[in-house]
View 1 (cartoon, rainbow, N blue to C red):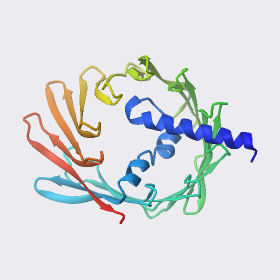
View 2 (view 1 turned 180 degrees about the vertical axis):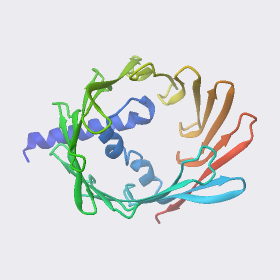
View 3 (view 1 turned 90 degrees about the vertical axis):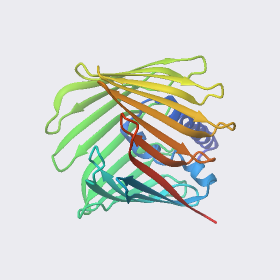
View 4 (view 1 turned 90 degrees about the horizontal axis):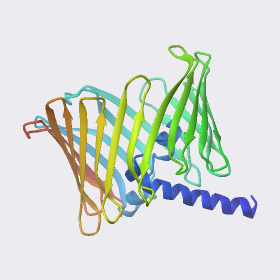
Length: 317
């Protein structure tokens, strides 16, 4: 590798770090590959600093507790194992879907393999990268037989501009193209789905952003096919942390979030209020002194706790 390319790699990695530090705050949209893989370990620095080896998530409802998620980290804060039971019911009545995932990395801490052992048919995802750490391909094997393959293309700024899915089982393709604004935020996804249930006509989802002088997102509007829409707004503290956000979905759903910090700007509480027609419900999230979640409390319109999630940590010595 040439010195010029090596320097560009370091610069690209630095830019990625800068982008990742804004993920939680900017609320921008990202392509599927970025959300699925590049954001998988966006909290690894905090996990490593806290020396967390295992996170256990416990659901408490109607006086009954159930462990629903178990995450194992390596000493660098990267996820290596994840066992979870996803409750698909709105009232958390115990309608679980089990997941069993394993993550394997190379020496550069790039994810190269994900193994999904949730079902009898084991799924294995293999990822390849270029010299700039961009994902170039993703292959899905089901019971050791190639079923799907993604290929990714980038522009000169290492922004993902095209994703091509080739489905070998259904013998079809799905192509997504991505457009960005001058702030490198995603503004349009164009999908051409030639698989069963799709259409040759391109389907577009658009995102419009408004920024402040510090390049932080103040407003985001999502324009979906048809008449669906979503509008969001954000405020920030003098230190640049999120202070509040609001979200309007359609014509009758509104979410308001308020963030509380200690004197060291460590988030200690997040309060979320949901309004749907005349119904109001609250979510309160509390954190420890390092900013790790301790508990999530969900309330009904009368202020009664419906259910809670508790987070229990095991630490490296």
